[in-house]
Amino acid sequence: MLAEEIAAIARKMYDSSAVSILFDEAEEGFKRPSLYFPPVEQTPRGSSLSTFGFDNVLYIKLFGETTRSAMEAAQKIAYQIAAEKNLIPLVNESGAATGRVLRLKEISCKKVDTAAAQLTVRWLSVYAYTEETGQQAANFIANMSLK
Image (cartoon, rainbow, N blue to C red; front, top):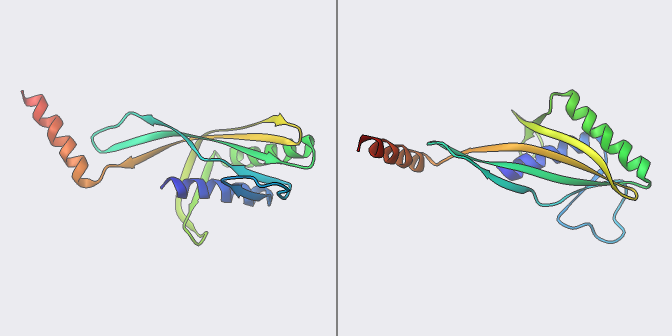
C-alpha cells in the first residue's frame, strides 16, 4: 500500500512538471531538473479494533539548474496539488487510475541548497488488520470489558 501511495505522488508530480524522477540514490551527474524521492519517514498512529496507521512524510528534493528554477518548479508542483484540494489519484502498476484518491495533509516547498528546493509532503495511511486479527482484537476487548 505504501509503495502505491508513493508511486501515485511521484506520478502526480511528474505529470505536473515533466521532471525526471530518482529513487533510492542520486548518482553522480544525474539529469537536471529532477525529483529525488528518499525513503518515507513514518510515525505510528494509534490503532482501533480494526485499523492501524502511520503519519508519513516525504522530503522530496527538486534539483534544478539554478536555485530560481528549482524553486519555480517546486512551487508549480505544490500549487497544482493544492489547487486540486491535495487529492492525489491512486494508480495501479500500469499507471492507470484506480478511481481511489490519497488526500495529502500538507504540501509545502522551500529552498534547501544552491539549485535545490525541497517539497515536504505529509499524509496519513490507515490500514485494516487482517480479518482474523481484527476479530481477535475485538474479542479480546469485549472479554476484558465483561470482567
